[in-house]
Image 1: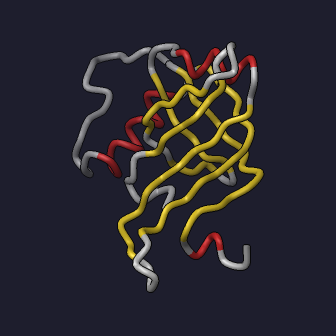
Image 2: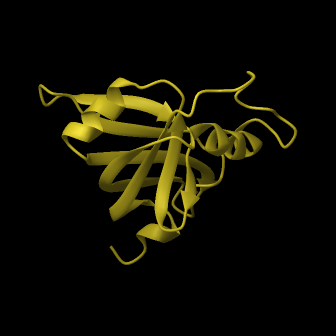
Length: 131
């Protein structure tokens, strides 16, 4: 599901405790879920202050009960400076097509990579069996 091209919804915690949601492209790097951004954003400040995050993805498969599969991952995130342009190019092949150049600019800034260590997974799908 994570590398299927489904948009992910990343939830971070604002300073006042309210949720902040961003749609992001995601992929895997080893056991971590990764996402990239060129400019610094609110979600980065939120993660640096409180690393707890939730990430949801909706799939396209309908199971035998008529439910659409989805995945929810809870974990802790960290922000790395640099590497975003290369990650975004890799993810663009999944999200936009194999021949896309992304970001569509010469010399993109190094940006930021969000790395999520998953602590708990839920949802509807084979990853949720036996819950």
